[in-house]
Image 1 (spheres, rainbow over the protein chains, first blue to last red):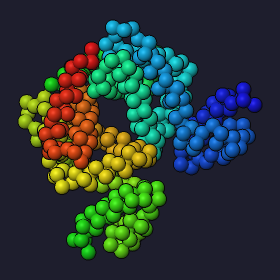
Image 2 (image 1 turned 60 degrees about the vertical axis):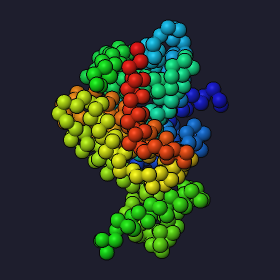
Image 3 (image 1 turned 45 degrees about the horizontal axis):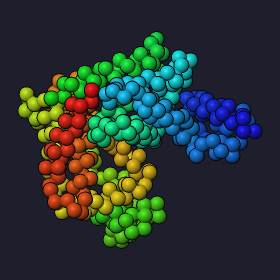
Image 4 (image 1 turned 30 degrees about the vertical axis):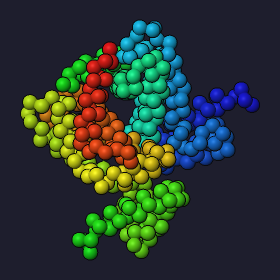
Length: 191
Length: 191
């Protein structure tokens, strides 16, 4: 059984997104998601996710780990923002272009629901904490570390929204690098 | 009736915080809060707040307005961070020292509950948006405006936590000004 679980998980995520897009997030039940994922039961759903909301945030723990690992692996003399740039690059590389359309639908579901936006804001903070901790381990003072992490996540969020745009053609790594440069330039004009 | 409403609202907030502190957030019902606030009914509670969680975020719309108004009123040549400093000053001035102990208890209730931390993160974003919009009206480009707003809110959150510390003795205005200076200095060391 266990070796099928990753596939089950992915099927549940896709079934949920399909249903949320078709009939709305609030109107969709866990039973419907399980059924759509190939005749699964509610119980199977709950083996993978704690609730309906969580199914949309699958993978975010993995994202925190990718970001933190890349910061740890950045060359010793890298500045905080250079380490953050390496982290964005690593995370962006996990999003191949065939996930673009899926991501666009995900963003639309988030946008339409306050509860999901709240969870997204809280997950954003979780990723920021992971990056901040990784930067502090490199000897970056806490305040600088938390600002660098925030700047990096903002850059990633902007780049992600551009990438998910159906008109978009550039890879996420390129968009993320450019967004970070823009935010860095903006930070220099604060006072 | 209407002229008693502000008082009712404040009594509900205090009753809620008392009960959350005594018996925990999850274990407290809306009926208990209403009863503790002087024998009120659930219906009265719901005239003031949409749910149990909202009672702890009373006043945050007012905070957004105070911040935005102060940014609008800052002198024309003020830099983005100078306008933000004026906003923090205005908001901090609304917290007199007799609210210190109440605020400390509020922070403790937030800290102990994931759902409340989520709502706090989302409200933080709402205040950031209000400041960003006010800065953009001054002609500050969006990216710079959103960074200045974020820096300001981080400074305020840090200062607020220091101020709420029972050992603390300094007024919130002073702590907020210093926190903003520290974050500004940290931003200068990003790369």
